Amino acid sequence: MSKLHIAPATRDQASTLLDMIRGLAQFERLSQLCIATEDDLLRELFSAKPAAEVILAWEGDQAAGFALFFHNFSTFLGRRGLYLEDLFIRPAFRRRGYGRALLVYLARLAVERGCGRFEWAVLDWNAEAIGFYRALGATVLPDWRITRVTGSALAALAAQTMLQQGPSE
Image (cartoon, rainbow, N blue to C red):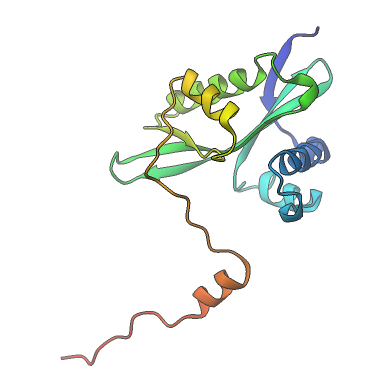
């Protein structure tokens, strides 16, 4: 077995990344929502001002997995945090410690960058992942729910009138 190597993704790896994103969507039973294209990834992740960062886990010359992350900000801590949007290990490479290695890499990056926290979401049906994250010392927050507005609901919210200003005194 070749040794694991983790490195930031590069533009020429966009198609490899997209393939793994599609694998993640299939695993999460959400393939119908995966509409990203290679051009989308090139524009959003590898431009002068990327929306997020990606690291790839490699076993020899084979991409074994990826982690996509970005910075958020905690108003309570007054510091930025590191938010893991997606973590995926290809099935053939699972149970080799690669998911753990990606999380350790990101935890070190968060500490290096002075982040106050490192967080992510996990699907409630993914008991194996929840157990894995807990074993690493993560806390699964039971009283927080992700709230999302997309598509036509996002357009409708954006089109609403903001608070009306009263007459000036």
